[in-house]
Length: 178
Image 1 (cartoon, one colour):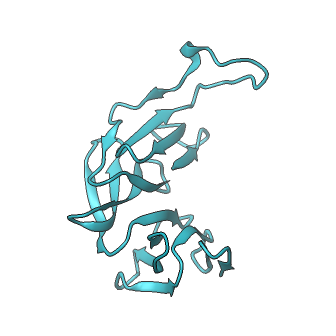
Image 2 (cartoon, helix red, strand yellow):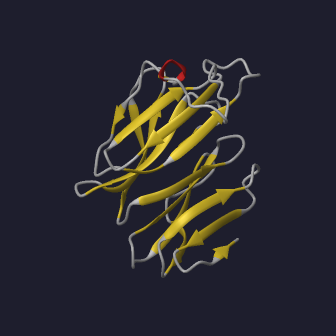
């Protein structure tokens, strides 16, 4: 999974970040603020981005399935799965390196994440291949973590409008639902 956060004009601790996570259960945060690449030339090793101090994060399961930056770029949300905890979402602080559970105990892996423009609400999609998929909405003003929708196919992607009024998701059956 990849996630991009670019706020070079804001007064944020980081200007532009790229998060990379995968099945090796490692989440890496790269500072790409000064990275300049000429697409017609090979990138020299000295031009590669560097990891921020808190990176890399080691997951709590069998690999990261999904990642998304919070609205101000100070933390990353990561969806994961472990046989002990089930599917879960944790928030990893880029300053302290600590992680906080946000959602846990799901029957299936969290495969995709999206946040609203103000960061108050997060949408997660879950599911196993050939299994049931769910879309969950959680955050400020959301009362519980019950699935918003169940599908007969795993949810492969979610998106939420900046104001949180619309949610779209795609499932393994190829359909997009709003």
